[in-house]
Length: 429
Image: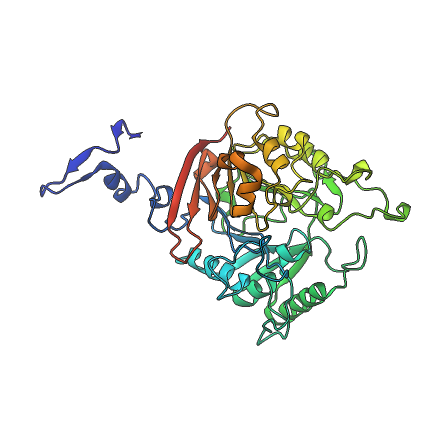
């Protein structure tokens, strides 16, 4: 590596005769921010202004992604806590362990990464859809909030431990589409929202498809005119790619006697852009309807047309067999795929094959997964070795102005947050 025409591994001497590498000199001079470096075996350097950090937090029990935006705006997308009984060959082990709940581990992770920030809170929390591995599911004997009286599971536990300004989901305030959402998890979630609205001044909004200012920078937006989060899809409504215009991909509900849209099909999707860097996440949206199902149940294809090429794609539905269809992969053609996996069939062998196929789009691509179970390795076979990292938190760190990014893999066996591996830098197109 060279900087200012000098190789960074050169040795320099100061006036007192002490020698040190040039790389240390340029860090001390502020020419190269500490957070851009990172070192295997050492804790991940904390976020610095101008950088974009996206942390895919692994608890082994669902999805959670924490965002530190360039001006310090913070956002959490999902806080999964599967309500399936623990143990058995199908389920992942809890990470770091089962001494705490997923909501606690997520909160502790976020609090660590917020160290030194002027305000240690979440500006936004967003739920892509209402399944336990994304919002948290209630278990018998679960903890109850001391202040609010609601049960603590996933998103309600994070919101109990870290203050937040605004919650965004797909169905506020009626929660009645495509059918009334009345199960115990939803009743508890709504009690959580009502308490925080009344007692903490929290705001709740429904995700507005087509908009680019609902998830906006809140501190110094004027300094980052090349940053945007575009709301792509939810509830079958999909951005057209023109202005804020939206079209409805689903047929009218009143015309359907069966095959109502599933919760996964209603998932929120958005594209984050920072300079030349683009990132897509779409919850559990499917792209391969089951045999005999209507074509409109493929949500990925029209979404792909709206999104276009990206640098990083979070695999829909944990790279399950019904997601990441050929059209979607060909249109997005990411340099990095991220799989937030928590059961043995994440990823599906057929889906992994599509993600790796250079017949769909040429060039290199790297795949990272938060968990790969031994049974999964056995089932997929040698192809599993093409997944670059198979265990750990996955952090995407984007350089100022979005010109390049790196991927850091963090140890998830404890709270050291030590870097296990570093990939990149990747150049943004």
